[in-house]
Image 1 (cartoon, one colour):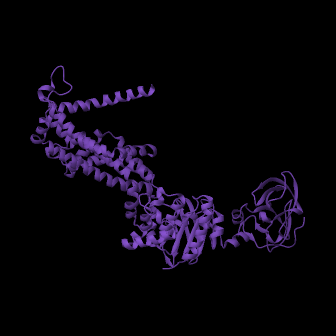
Image 2: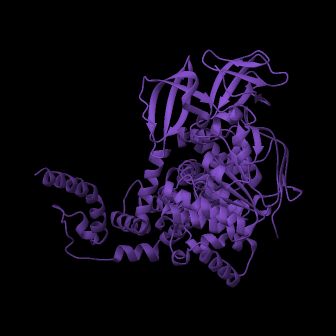
Image 3: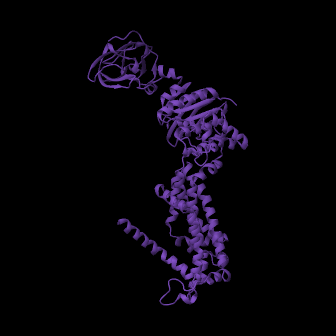
Length: 358
Length: 272
């Protein structure tokens, strides 16, 4: 047994009149770690549950390892799933929980116990095998849920927001463990999350979803550096990307406070300029903005600005001494600007032609 | 001071409620001649178990007892089997008219049993099973099931969907997931339902009176009444002895399962 590729082909899922997923096309490579990322209600969990076999697609096909699994029962798909709630069986001990998938495969008791021991050693659960789930801490329950998924060595792991119930410190720790686990096992991981940090740090590729549609499917770096549309641009990154709506006359982007010359073929008149907070350079430059709020975070300071009706967020060094009400000059990093069609919201392949001028 | 007053009140209520039961036990062990003495004796001057002996060896009491046990156990098994599966369906599966169905089930509760009893009798005759224990099992199921469904439904609504999903992904079939995961989680609800159904069947009188009129199929309630209570005479000693023995199975069951029962009614109250 090894990793398997996963393919969604024109998959659509509707609950009555409500469409949860529309026309999802997604090809996940064997052994890849892919995150489905998006706000709640974007269809990511529904997609995962369809992959697990817990929901049936309204139309379209889902295949695992080249085999169409639309009509295959969840237990026969050779996938394992970790649930957000962990879904540990409350009346079974930790050992029985981990052994359950093996029992359903018809594995003999002796071999089952050996496998459970192996997994328990791997996840440091040996001392807890006879406890009931309710006697465990959240982190321990999480490891049991992982253990129950790992014990069968399935081809594909499905993880539905597995870290969202842990505290911040434990979450950072488990992120690292999951990356390590994926590297060791080399299996396909499909990971659902609304936390972009998890998606960015762990994934080979991120599938950003919104309103039941796939908005972009690319490696984390590319999703961050070249967002395919306004949604991805504003969803990825904290603080989010600044979006400034303005006009484009074929050569220059114009907003009352900001003007940027661009080289772009066939751009529309109504466009939106995207600037990451770290690309807003405070202190000198051709533009002027009023400081509204200053938020020191410790290692940096987040500054909220207002320039002729446009709200801007900038990252400034921790030691900057800006005060609300102050007027600061600023510049934009020309090589890091994004331009979007304001009507279709799609990215325009544009390059700012020179260092920013007023 | 308030505590004392409160306790006093509580004990008064307990005494008032328990007195008839106590009187029943005392009467059942008094010899016949002491029963109608004026003024009545409270504690029997002489204790006798002759009424119990007579009841057990000289009357069809044991047949009635057997009928009642068979009847109550069969009804309980049937109702619980159908209600657990039905409640699971009402909670887990999506199909058109699911909520309406659940409400309709409760609607049957609104009809007084007197209205249902004649059609039910005719139905039993038509099916050829009138005058049998089976006809009573079916009749009792028809009024125990709606409540059992609702009680179990509220219990099962409290079981997270993810548990069953996890079992399915772990390789269980639907039925296995139900048996391995749902049933153990619903156990308190199932026990409450068992108790409820058992007590209902054990104490039922009206249907038994109308649907069955042979001694072979009579349960305790109607059997004891027709045997000991006639227009001319009431056999008080035997009646009380019979009442004591009728209560014993329920008291035993209650003693063991009481905590589940109260928990069950609690769950029904919050969610149902």
